Image 1 (tube, one colour):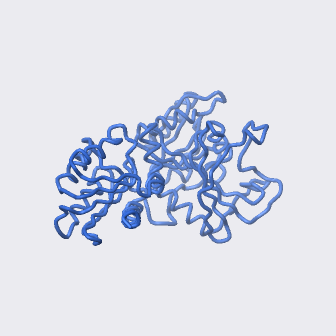
Image 2: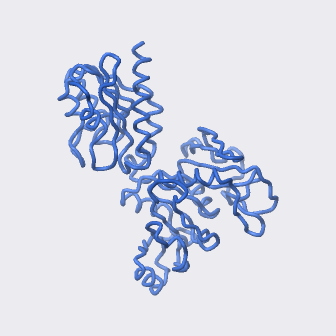
Image 3: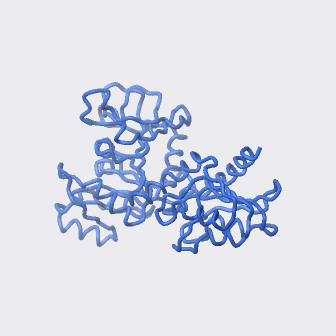
Length: 367
């Protein structure tokens, strides 16, 4: 019965954590519930970076003393001074009987230390309740804290025969209205969204989340030689835009963008003379951008796949067939089926008549 009870309250803590999806970066999503004799007496979640962590909010919301109660926390309490004091000290000061932790924190400054401090203080501590779910809600944080690189999601809409446009280049609209609303919600959950210059030149997108309530992500456009016109809608007031170029971009083009207040980030070239995607990810990581949504076009999607830089794949599959057209993915150099990129399908979502496939890339060593 104890195991069932612990799982029940951990699910509650997970629901609290998920409410702040897209709002805590670069911090993790964390929920906490305080229980005494089967009754929730306090609960909370981490709202945003720099503010109280979930444990503190749960303690402050308690309707009675928490001494002798049980804490349920989705992620190991921090044990170091960061933007806020160590949460493990605050938990210990409350003198709970038990602490139940969903998963350990991968942050080298914390990993296992918070749990050890709890146990050394004489508090019964259980670790690993609903661990898989607790790890999944923080897959972005785990990647970022361990590598310093943003978690990369590739997303595109295609027909059943794998086309993102017809032979004439027409692509509006492959997906349904409900799918487009889903895509805007997805944008609001990411720190930044990236496309190539060709996508902007062809479609002139705004790259905002205007169909839903939420923050607009930082818009990033890979434009090696700064070909984009200043009139492009991606430079509108819908949010901030970062242009990524190489040293080959003309000085007068740089000045033109600077005069409009548009930042140009210079990145080294790759072997093909385009901006080096790995260097972009490193630069974004240094800016505390922990999640990146890549929406295309096909050349950019293919480049991320070719370099094994993606973590998640979202494909909106529309029940349409167009025959000859633009492939969603270009040449990857795969000659044997054994060398194909491997994925693990997590879920299938239906929006309108479309199916949305949500998958994670298998580790490179097992591809």
